[in-house]
Length: 130
Image (cartoon, rainbow, N blue to C red; front, side):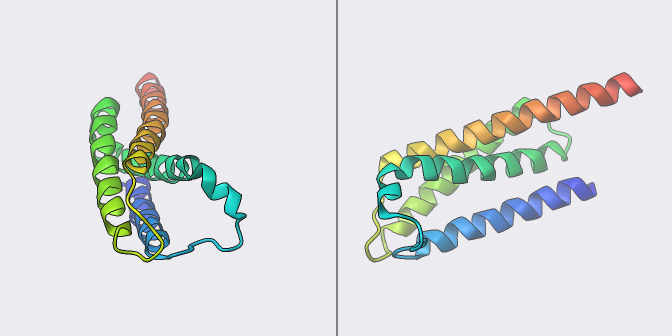
């Protein structure tokens, strides 16, 4: 495992922990305007895009082809989103929403796709240098 892979994996674990923490709070970001939460699907997609990019980058370091890393990342991101939605159902003033899960999955897919493209480009450059 390279240092980059380890850093991306650690970042993914830390980001997942941050998502878990935010999901554990009745009002995780009190400084944000309440009207922003009317568009919380974008917040879900953004958070899971970061998670998807980090997970895909870490998997790419395990010598998985970028598109295999993409597929596995989408599965992992969707599964984590499902457990997060279930977890939120136990938090006061929070609820579980299938639309949030769809936003989580789409965000993970977008972040993973961006990272897969980056990994593919980096891999192509490395093979040209050889």
